[in-house]
Each structure stands twice: as C-alpha cells, then as structure tokens.
Image (tube, rainbow, N blue to C red):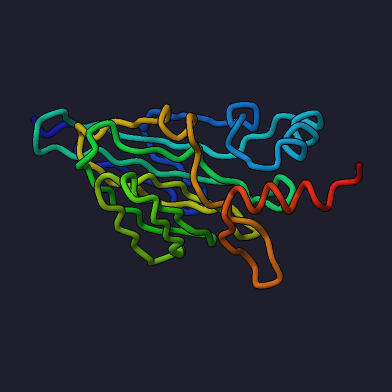
Length: 197
C-alpha cells in the first residue's frame, strides 16, 4: 500500500528519481510556434531537446494525485521563447498547481470558454494555480533552464489535441521589456511586415 509514495528530485537538473521520462525535441513542436519560417530554419540546423518532463503516478483512485518535474531549456525560435506544447486537461474540471524551482519563466493561461488570457511569472519559490477548464503552457523566458513541479488529480489526463487544433490566442515574445504577450494574429502580421519580399 505504501510503496512509491516518496520520491527524490533534483530541482536544478529537473530530474525525478524513478519517474517516467518524456523528452520533447524541436521536431515534436511543429505548429506550436507562430513564426513558422523561423521554426523551419531552426529545425534545419538541428533537433535540440526543448523540454523534458519526468512524472510519477502513484495511484489512480478518485482522490489520488500525480506529479511531475519539468525542465525547459533556454532558447528562442525567432522572437518566441522555448515552451511546452501546452494542454487542457481531458477531465476539464481538473486544476493544477505549478511550483517554480529554478530559472525564470512564465505560465500562459487561457480560459477555454472565453479565451481570456493571463501571463503569470513562474520562478523559484513561486506557485501558480491553474484553474480547471484552462489551457496552460509553460515558457522559459530566461537564460538558464527553467525547472518546476506540477501536481494534478490522477484522473486529469492531458488533451494536447485541442491546443494543436487552435493553439493559444497569445504568443510570448522577446521585447525590450524582456517578454511580452502579443495576440497571435498581430504577431504573425508583424513578422510578415518585416520579412523581405
């Protein structure tokens, strides 16, 4: 009954001893970045690891929790920072808590029904609460790896399909202020306007 209820993790390396590891390379993130031309150029130069998630699933009962530790590498595609695919929970009422461990980044959240967006800092010793029915994506806006822990109900599941179909309404891009959220359509228009014909 009490096996697999304690884990050890490295907050800087972003590893979780005994966890199931998922590795996402640049080629796994097709359609995520708004600047498709910058994405194609970057992919032609190699297929780096963008992020990893190691997770533990100690139980599947109604009251059980799953948790994982994520690590997003620093980097950009054009002006867009490296980020996760982002997801909704398959069981839409499920909320999630993110705890920042190292590095600096941000959490993009978008209400599924209204499209209302929020950009919240995810930094060491900070906690971001993601309500149910909210799409969320983690973004590394710093110069070192961003690591964090996510804790969610066992039945939450991950719905990546909804995000792949419509993506987020906002893009987080580098700016003079560091990072700013820009409407996706406006950002794409800005890219087209500055591209040579």
